[in-house]
Image (cartoon, rainbow, N blue to C red):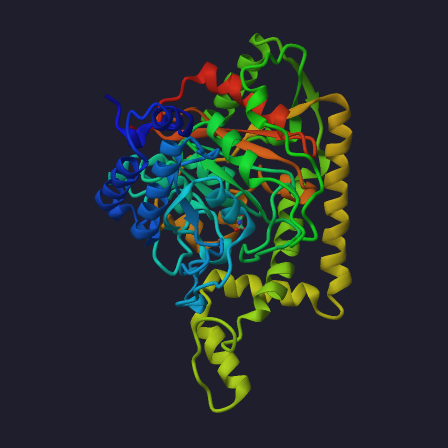
Amino acid sequence: MEKLTSQTIHETLDGLKNKSFSAVELTKDYLRAMEEKRLLNAYVLETPDKALAQAQEADRRYHNGNARALEGIPLGIKDLFCTEGIRTTACSHILDGFVPPYESTVTGKLFAAGAGCLGKLNMDEFAMGGSNENSFYGPVYNPWKAEEKLVPGGSSGGSAAAVAANICAAATGTDTGGSIRQPAAFCGVTGIKPTYGRCSRYGIVAFASSLDQAGPIAKDVRDCALLLNVMAGYDEKDSTSAKRNVPDFTKVLGQSVRGLKIGIPAEYRPEGLNAEIAACWDKGIEMLKSAGAEIVNISLPHSKYALAAYYIIAPAEASSNLARYDGLRYGLRVSGDHLDNMYINTRSAGFGQEVKRRIMIGSYVLSAGYYDAYYLKAQKVRRLIRDDFVRAFADCDVILTPTAPTAAFPIGDCSMRENPINMWLNDIFTVSVNLAGLPGLSLPAGLSAAGLPLGLQLIGRPFDEETVFKAAAVIETETGFERLK
Ligand code: GLN
């Protein structure tokens, strides 16, 4: 029989309902698997006691017939989500030992729906990065080709690696410029960044507030839909959360895409695009076409400025959000002979190199004299990028692109390390989606010649995750991608 930990959430829920196994048995299997796979460094904190207590409650509820939507499903939680009474550090030294007195809305909803917490997952410090190499707790190893020591992508690297390695049933992620989709692509799992405002940001450590969104990373499309059903919804504690009805996202799965218009942006196929990525994209296009969808060529002419705009706007917001880490209120404090020196010492010791780089860029572009030249220009570009999408969605219903320009690369890859811009280029297909606030999903759609997962991205209209899910389900079925068991 297939291991319990290899099963999807929807398979697991069937097993729990039929009493083929108990939530405690299932949780113990996951805890054992976590122990076996500690070398991946996916978890920065394991919470077995909490997970087992939640599993016991789940078993009681199955017994009493009042099980909730995700009853007994053990999850991993990205360390960016504040979890009440459980250490939360955003994988930064500066948040050493911080134990939040409150729960993020999204994790609170998941636990209130019966899901359990196996522990906190590794990530790039403050979600800044695309390889999980910026974590204070060290890198995460991609479970594919373990002997080659590849990155899992980032910043939700721990989340994607843990889902792929079957050491959680699914995980939470956050995505500011691609951090759900790119690691999902690198690890051969599925993740969706919902429309900005779909999920509450309350209790999620802020990186760039106008771009950050929470979303699920899971073993398949249906599991993502099941999780988003629970995670989404208006929250009065987040003024940017949207007063929108949350449909049952699983309803559209399996529906026909006949007549659906799939946009293919010309600008996403630059000269020199990796041939394997291009071939994978072509296969995806063919699959939707043979399923009856109509392929339309679209243009997103300002996409070429997306990275430049993103790497002004995101650091600007980050430099402001991270001003609160001053050694007084949270975590680390390094003393100094004067208050200013205490700030300086704490922030010098507490932040990693990438975070410091972003704070400096952000402070620069927000400073008098440069604000108009950089920050305001970037905001104008952001509007043009959004307008491109509005125009494109007059001609199509959903857009199909690759998720990332490469497959997973080796930890410590020199070309990435020597020049931070190379790392930033990995976000080329994902950042414009955040700038425009749109939903974007990545699913595995094949393997490279080296045997590494390649992802495809579906981008939808604002609050039209349903069409994204519908098209993704078709590609998933046609691809028949084999997850790691
Ligand atoms: N890789 C991008 C960055 O470093 C995106 C990160 C994210 O989405 N959190 O900013």
